[in-house]
Amino acid sequence: MKSRHSILPALLPALGALALGLAAEPALAQEAAAAAPTVNKGDTAWMLVSTLLVILMTIPGLALFYGGLVRTKNMLSVLMQVFAVFSLVAILWVIYGYSLAFTSGGEGALGAIIGGFSKAFLAGVTTDSTADTFTKGVAIPELTFVAFQLTFACITPALIVGAFAERIKFSAVMLFTGLWVTFVYLPIAHMVWFSEGYLFGLGALDFAGGTVVHINSGVAGLVGALLVGKRIGYGRDLMAPHSLTLTFVGACLLWVGWFGFNAGSNLEATGGAALALLNTIVAPAAAGLAWMTVEAMGKGKASLLGIASGAVAGLVAITPAAGLAGPMGSIVLGLVAGAVCYFAVTAVKNALGYDDALDVFGIHGVGGIIGAIGTGIVAAPSLGGYGAGEYSIGGQVWTQIVATAVTLVWTGIGSLVLFKIVDAIVGLRVTQDAEREGLDLADHGERAYNY
Image 1 (cartoon, rainbow, N blue to C red):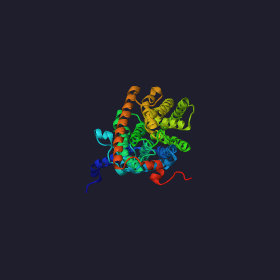
Image 2: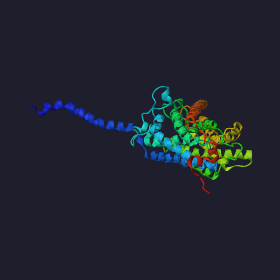
Image 3: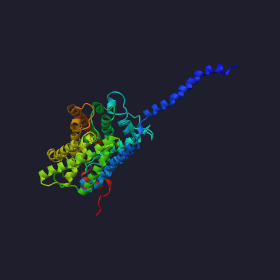
Image 4: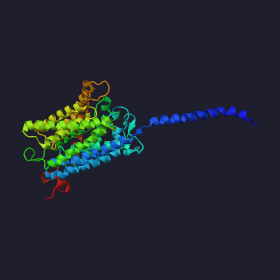
């Protein structure tokens, strides 16, 4: 039998390895903890509230804003279109939309344009997973990010329906929405907001959706209005809004919901969110006043519809710059947007003669272009903005112009092709009898008002 003294030397290497392992465990645990993003409950709560606010700006905000602007016989058709579009896109988003917008599409040109199907049907998205949207090491649950981005995907095609309101088939709206979100919205969102996207790589700035939401929807609306054609009696019959009261309520809900849209895009409850929130107050306020002033100078009177439309134009313009501009720059951006969009929906539309029923292009398209390009100016630190790095106003403005041009071309051509496909399958326009009767009864068998 060996003595204890003879066994001890043989055990020393094993004991040393065990001691080193025990000593290393806390260090490894600390490294793992450091690598794992910390989910902040305050940030998560803010993002959940922001998600609800964006839903509020769509249903009922946008629906009422649009509904009040059409004639009585088409009120329910607009409400129905906005509600149904929201519902359809919500389902498509969780099936494949989120995956195509916010996952890698592989190397090469295709991956810079669209993502892949690795998270189709939300595969791998659990209550424990976090989104790849970390700021300062703080993450939000991935499900929260999925829901927040879902609301952006839903409101964008809902904006489009205002351009060809009162004369398009409901079936055409639904088919076009499904195709358009898939082949137009998702690639633009991927290019602008995903880290491997083409426009993201160029350094294009779009804080909350100037290109992705507003230029995208505005151009698609204009293409649709041109292809569907003018309403019967356009330019001859009275087509005044049937309820400016409802339009006013809708505009107010849009403004309130826009705080989630812009300030929520900060993804954290920090000073950056507060900046975006403040800018979302002052820019539309300035734009509404600018529109009202120009209108009063031209027509002799300032209208409620005018100041409400101006405020929406200001909201559109500040969207891409919300977390990047200083408050003074936001006011200037709002003033420019209010004045220019007024001329776009009056002088320009009248001169060209197209029937954009609810001025989707004049406000969202033109306002989005002003905001997207103007972001390159107002984000400059030398002008009170919060652009990062060695900021060059000229260089950034050029990048913004490129991003705007890419969006215009992609959306314009894509929308044209998709409208043609829809027209071939179900037809775009209702019959003349249905249009004269009103889409409420013709498409849905209901009336907004039973006297």
